[in-house]
Image (cartoon, rainbow, N blue to C red; front, side, top):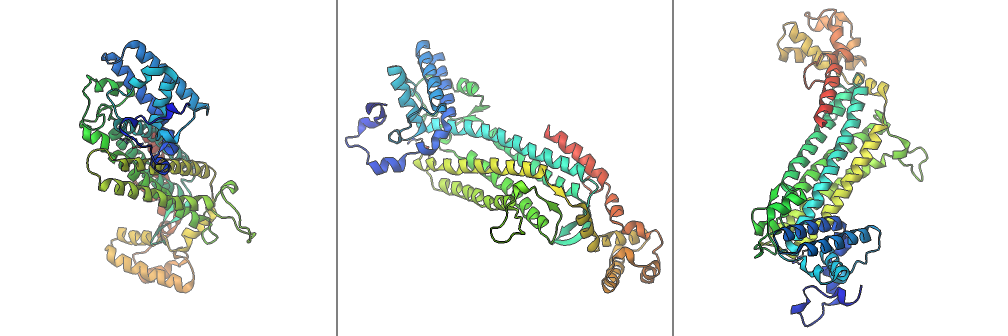
Amino acid sequence: MSADSKAKPWGGRFSQPTDAFVEDFTASVGFDRRLYRYDIMGSVAHATMLAEVGVLTEQEREAIVGGLREIEAEIESGRFDWSVALEDVHMNIEARLTSRIGETGKKLHTGRSRNDQVATDLRLFLRDEIDALREETAELCRVLIALAEREADTIMPGFTHLQTAQPVTFGHHMLAWVEMLLRDRERLADCRRRVNRLPLGAAALAGTTFPIDRARTAELLGFEAVCENSLDAVSDRDFVIEFLSDAALLMMHLSRFSEELVLWVSQQFGFVELPDAYCTGSSIMPQKKNPDVPELIRGKSGRVFGHLVSLLTLMKGQPLAYNKDNQEDKEPLFDTIDTLHGSLRAYTEMMAQVKVCREQTRAAAARGFATATDLADYLVRKGLPFRDAHEVVGRAVRLALERGCGLEELELDTLRGLCDLIGEDVYNSLTLEGSVAARNHIGGTAPEQVRAAARRARERLG
Ligand code: ARG
């Protein structure tokens, strides 16, 4: 580019050049160039609308659109010369348009401002990213649903307070994660509706004197509607904050999931094995196989929560309408999106290869008197009020603890000594398989229910 083509588009009013440090400090091109495709998409639609309402001639429109397409190819092939002097992605592309097609390039900015332009670019970009993230979340759900079906009969302890509570099936536990992820997907779809609005036409803040057709621009860009108020259109970033809240929830879910995996692969639990390719060793302790990937994802949730707080803080003191503060919205958004893509990919590939150690999970459930509630329920069915049943079972657990055995190993006479309502059939209620099979209703852990829930979850994914 010639020196002149890098002259400030707003230079007219200024008699001194921008300080070199300030130029660098205020530039965003280093990161907002990521928006180039959307910037060009928005400009093509704007120019097309301007031609349709007669502000540009058809030849001018063609020259502009042709030039923009060539610039897109230049950027994609890595030949584009990005300039910090031209501050941001918008002015870089516009200046290049003029250097390519001449004077007509200068007409593109008619009836718009960088303020409505950047808001438009960001919405177009985020809309695509939401679609991709929803698909990636669906892919992870599919992997977990398949795992749930495979392990529908696998017994493991269910916990409260991280103490063995009642037996559950591994498949049921996986489907709990699927429910959370399905809600995350739903939240993203809901957010998309509010992202999908057109700011263009708001111009700098008050609208424009040209006879623009905003509905037409919205249609060309696939927006559901236009932003109704020009001041709001250029200054609102709550759509980014909403997305970041959804992202924070999704990362919080993956972080909890990671916490479980880290526990489960430990020698103390030994419930699952992660693929070697997803673990690393220790440089000093030869026996180690560390669950780095879940640990890292648990750690990465922190930066995503931080980005949400950054954006809330960024907005809280801003008077209407656009302020340069808003330039700071992009890096947290980009980093959040990159973190989500990486974490979802890692989870999908890792969970597709996870090995469940069925004997270990079953043995762990057998250890913790997990069927104590089943024994109480048995007594209730025999006519004992639940509170009294609870007391009887408490004494049975104490006996078993003293003898160092499981509830199912107590002899019938011993049990009848605690309560004479107990009969031979009590042992059906004391087995782990009997316990899970008995919870046979929607939302329950019975293998039959897990299979049905897996089918429904798959349908909900569409
Ligand atoms: N780079 C700016 C941003 O990201 C674009 C809009 C600048 N508008 C302005 N009037 N300075 O927000």
